[in-house]
Length: 244
Image (cartoon, rainbow, N blue to C red; front, side, top):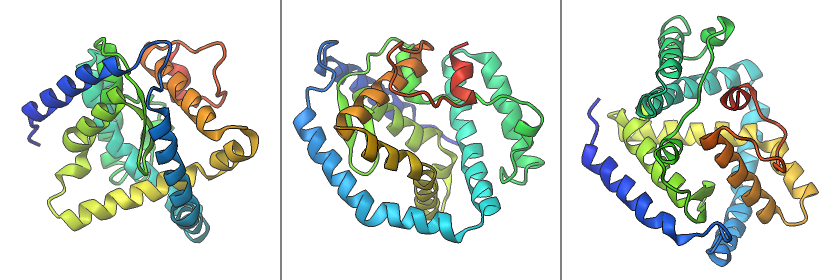
C-alpha cells in the first residue's frame, strides 16, 4: 500500500490554515450557507436516501446486514490503527492490530466479529481526531453535501482517511470501489433510521440540535472529556472507553 505523503501534508496545511475561520464564541460563522446545505441534505435524504436505506433494512435479513456492517467495521479498523500509531497510542494500536488479524482471518474477511467475542476492545480513531491531538483547532462548523455535519479540521481529516488510509481506496477496479462505498453509505444510513426520526420529532430546530450534538461529541472524542450539558446520552462501549 503506497501512501502519498505530499497529499497528506497538503491536507494538514489546509486544515491548519482554515481553523482560524471560527472563534470560540462563534463556531458557526457559515450558518447561512450551512443551513442551505442542511436543507438540501434533508430533502435528498427524505426523497431518496432514507427510502433506499429503509428498503435495504426491510429486504435483507438481519444476519446479512450484520455481516455487511462487520465487514466495513473491520476495514475501518485499519484506518483507526494508522491513526492510533500517529497519535502514539501504541496500546490501542496493538488492540486494533489484533482485531484486524483475527477478524480478517478467523472472521472470514471481517464478516464475523470474532475479536469482540474474544473480548478484544476496539478503539476508533480518525485523522480529524489525530489533528486535534496534535493541537489543530476544529475550525468553523461545516455541513457537507450528503455527508452532513463536519468542521474544517474534520473535513481535512476525512479527506486524508478516505484517500490514503481507507483500504477501499486501494481497490484497483473503480466500479468495485464505488459499489463498496455506496453499500457502505446505505448500510450506515440504515443504522441511523430511528435516530433521525427522533431528532425530527423532538427538536424545535433540528439544524441547531444536530450541530451542537456533533461539536460536543467531536470535542469529547478528541479530549476524552464529556461535557456536562452534552446533547447525547447514547454513548456506545467504544465511546465510553475513550473517556475512562
